Image (cartoon, rainbow, N blue to C red; front, top):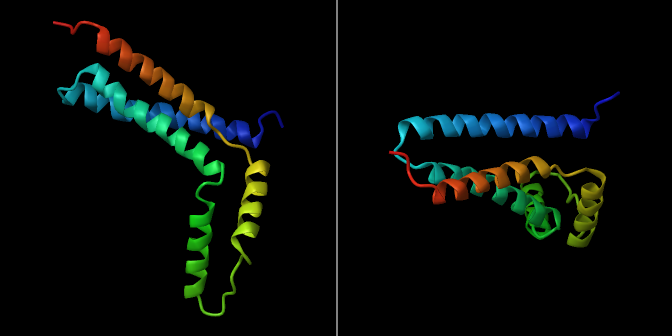
Length: 129
């Protein structure tokens, strides 16, 4: 097989990023009074903050909250034992899972940096008359 699963996911992320940007950009450009710098600022924030939050989440910062939420949900199910003995076991299992699975971050970083470049470019260009 020439294309791996990770490559398929990356291609889908690239396509989704382009489609999401076009669907956002066209109405904002033609139907709003925003200038181009402001229009490019929103996707910059979305793409780069998504990447940053995924990075923070993959370091295990939110594992304790996820562990508590999983235990809380299992406490509502009748006859359902707790999935994890303690938070350390949960954190170790999640760490192994994160190491096993990859993380797709490059498309969002590229789109965020391109949008940031255009945001800054149009902020310093004189407005068209």
